[in-house]
Length: 285
Image 1 (cartoon, helix red, strand yellow):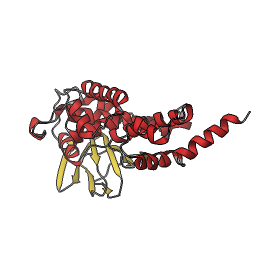
Image 2 (cartoon, rainbow, N blue to C red):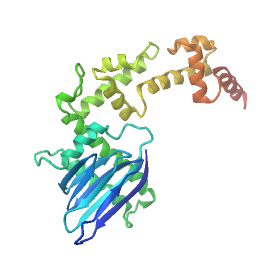
Image 3 (tube, helix red, strand yellow):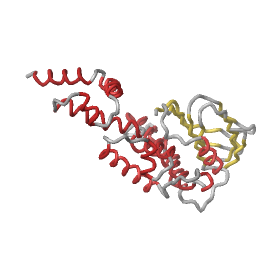
């Protein structure tokens, strides 16, 4: 994920309604600090007062129209680079609808709006850490998305849950389940593990399990398993004389050809050549 564009916009007092928006192939976070306005998005008009936070998927036209003397808002455009940190469209629709009908008895919203309000604070000219302001902004953006995702998971209506699936009651429980599965994989990487088996082990619905695992581990369950196996294989190649076929079997690969292909993708050379290079490096005084 990286930041494409970000700014604070102050719609000045004007007798004519001011508008802003458009469409672009990037995800966007829109936060309204002050004023009342309406947002046209996905065939619906969202009428709201500040504070309000809208999430906009790529290629979805949107138009913001102010209805008060002033309207102060910020926006951040993101290239998510195929990550799963941004909520899915169904969740986004639920979240955006909430902005028009916020419940003041929901204290969970306050920290989310606070993080959103402070997002661009790192860009102020007097910031002593302005040299790393963009990096701080990116971390704060990830924090904001984590908070929104957590809120949506906790608030998810039971009717949205697939039959027979299970979801954790809160973020801490979800993280504990994923960490337990990671430890299970580290102990059982030699076995023929599948995503379905791992999700069942975690008592989670498969797609939810994959998204949650990626958020915590930074990679999919299969990528994490491959990393465990390839790291172990490289250790065996450099510290033992085991044949490559035995190493492939020992770390859990069902096919030496698949093992060799993944190994070359990771290290740039075949397992046999990698072992030879390491042996030669060990002889250099």
